[in-house]
Every structure is written in C-alpha cells, then in structure tokens.
Length: 311
Length: 187
Image 1 (cartoon, rainbow over the protein chains, first blue to last red):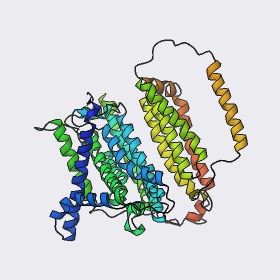
Image 2: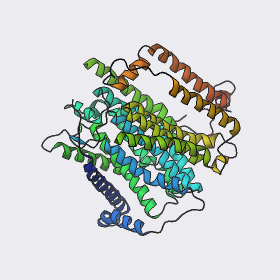
Image 3: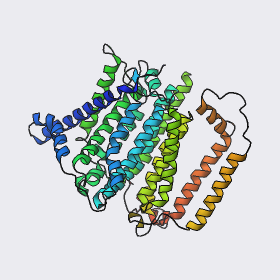
Image 4: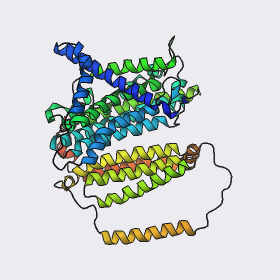
C-alpha cells in the first residue's frame, strides 16, 4: 500500500516524448483502420501522421475577421497542456513525476479545463460554425461530466486514498476493473467524450463544416488535433493505475506493463471511433443523468459497502 | 524563497486578472479573466499545503465559468453577449462600496490583535479542515443539502416557461410528453 516514487523534474521531457510516440501511434492506427475501411493502401497510413504534421507546419495560418486571438490560441494549444498535466500525476510503473496526494482530483480538474478550452477554441474564431461546435461540446459536457466524476470516485473509495500511486498499489491480484466494471465503462465514456472522439465528435462534425476546428489552420490545427489524441492517450494512461492494476503483471517490469496496458486501451478507444455512430448532443443529457449517473452511483455504493466491510 | 516568488506572482496574477474583468469589453474575456483569477487563488491555496481545497477550487471555478458561457447565451436577450459590451454598470456606487469594504477589511486585518498559535498544526490539514467543517455540523449539512436542491429545482421550475401541463396535457396523461426535443432514453 505505498505510493509511487516521485522522480526528478528532469524526466519530464521523457514523458513528453512518450506522449508524442503514443499520439503518433494512435493517429497511425486510426489511419490504417480508415484505409482498411476505404479499401486504400494501408502502408501509406503509417507515415500519414508525419506527412500531415509537416504539411500543417508549413501551411499558412488563416485568421478570421476580428477573431479573439488570445482566447482562440489558448483554447487550441491548451488541450495538449491539459493532457500533459494529467500525465504529471499518472505513475509509470513505480515512478511518477508528481506524487500529489490528491492526484485523482487533479486529473478531474484538468478534464474540466477541457470544457473551457474547447469552448474557447469555438468562440475565438468569431465564426458561426465553430461557435455552434463549442456549444455542442458544452451540451455534451453537461451530460458526461457528473457520471465521469462519480466513476473516478470508485477506486479512491476502495483504496482509502486520492493518491494515484496508492490506488495502483492497493490493487492486488484482483484489478479494480474486475469488481467495478460499471465505473470503468463510464470512465471510458468520459475519456472518449473529453477527447471529442468517436460518438462524442458532434462538436467537430462535417454537418457544421467541421465545427470547432472549421477555421483552424496550420500549426493551430496541428495542436488541436494532436491535443485531442493526447487527451485520449492521457485518459487511457490514467485508467491503468485506476482500474487496470497499475504496473502489476508477470515477467515484464512494472513500467513495461503500464505502457502495454496503456497501448491496448488506446487501441480499443481508437478502434471504437469507426464502430460507434456519432451521438446527437441533445440526446446525451438524459442518457448521462438517467442511465450513466445512477449506474455510477450504485457502483460507488457497492464499492463503499465492500470497502467498509473489508476494513 | 521559491515559495515567496510563486506566491507573489500568483497574487499579482489574481489581482491583475480580477481588474481585467471590468476593463475588457467581451463577455468571454471577462468570464475567463475571472476564471484565471480564481485559478491563481486556488494555486495559492496549494501553497498553504491545502492540496484538496486548492485543486477543488481550480476544478469548480473552471467548471463554473464554462457553465457561465451557457447562461450567457441562454438568458441574455438578443445575444448582446456575443458583441463587444461594457462590463460595468452602476459603477459609481460599486466603486464606493468596494473602497469602503477594502478599507474595512484591510484595516481590520492590520489593526486587529491576532491570536498567537496554540498547539501545533495537525499532520493532515485537509482531514482536520474536513473534521472541523463536517464533523460536529454533519446534521446541519445533511439537512441543508435537500433544501439547496429543492431551491435549485424550484428556481428552474419558476424560470421555465413550460410547465408539466404543456408537456403532459391538461390531465397529465399524454405519453410520451410533448417536448421541443426528444430525450435520449426514448421519452
């Protein structure tokens, strides 16, 4: 029942490189799946993320008339920062960048920051479609955030701690996902939602000309798209200590297991994008509050009863 | 030393962004200047080793300001919120009230005899704070929450222009209800 060991801040660049690799891999996998569905050449999909990065870096920035430039840039670039700040409290095996005793709350605060960032990206362009997209995201957020919060509550109740390292260490042979599957599913729904991914992509859909990202170009678009994937990766990485037993597993060292589990969950989340239809934003509120929220609360109750019983 | 620098930077940021709220001419900028001010205050609370209270302040304030953006369009007729507009009204009275309050609170803080510390700070400050707030007053808190929820629901019901008779018909027997948009669970 001990937390992870905080390493020196000089390891931060390594975390950034790792996040970059995962984002590239997620983008490549998405490209391969798209190519397979479309019947085009799959090999090209692997280099497409690099290709797109270079193209966007060279592309000229388009600026809309009387846009709110500071807010627009903060919103677009902020997603990546939020993802990195989530990873700051996510242990890699036995090591963590920050051994914050309220790491779970910190993660929650960062995913709430995404509300502001996506809306600001939509607002800043001073253009109709991005603004509609921004409000679509807030409509989704009102539906998914409370179930996500209560799903995040279950593992800390079981571990009697909000420290992510302690929660990872408190799971013995039985991972949290085994006896709190509802919380895990609701959590994954939340990750998809705050990454504006798959069924929750309504804010960036073609029916409103690309929504939030309609007027983003060049490096701004690169940061926004990279930021979405980074949030997906950070959400998956955070699920490992919370639900998937942290670094525990046979043969491989703890850090390797953490990476393997993260990669597996990222792959599933990326794959889901092509498997689930996009949800209409006005439908999620009732689903969130009448189905997901009670389910997450019942899960919390069950976990609390077991936690008190065992103690 | 480092803590001092961080404190002063955050304190100046909190005050500067709070002033900006009244200087800028856009609802969005005012809203998020206020959010930034609160975030700076939340981070100052982290410096007091009140990790839970600090992080939860950041969380709640960001969420609150995002919801403010929803209200901004919901409740402002003809959407002036989307156009440049002044962020102040009744400013003479407001300035007077603010000045008097500042002098009163600032003077109080400087002139009052602060008590000396008795005993040592507890190991877990957050737990101690939680005990002090919620321990003896748990009954009050439990009684309070339904009242607060009832107030919120009552407020929404009074503000909404559609009642249950609009939804379910005069005899409340229309199923499914007539709503402008269908919900997500088949109602």
